[in-house]
Amino acid sequence: MQTTETDPIIAELWAVRDRHAARFDYDLTAIFRDIRAMQETSGSDYVRYPARRVLSVSEEPPTP
Image 1 (tube, rainbow, N blue to C red):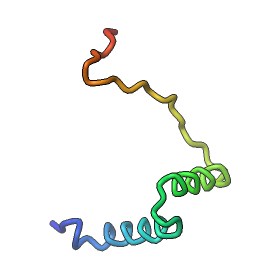
Image 2 (tube, rainbow, N blue to C red):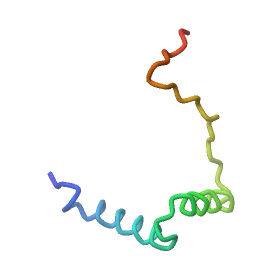
Image 3 (cartoon, rainbow, N blue to C red):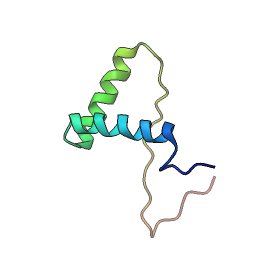
């Protein structure tokens, strides 16, 4: 079994991801905007779920 460091598919995936991030100087907001723009122009349908409220550590989740 290959590890992620020696798996050529994973290595290529990481290289593509790194080249894409470098185009935006590793700015996550800019990277996210670019990915969203690519989604909008792709013509594909994407599932979007509504944002969920994040509970603080002291809060308990609601009972169903």
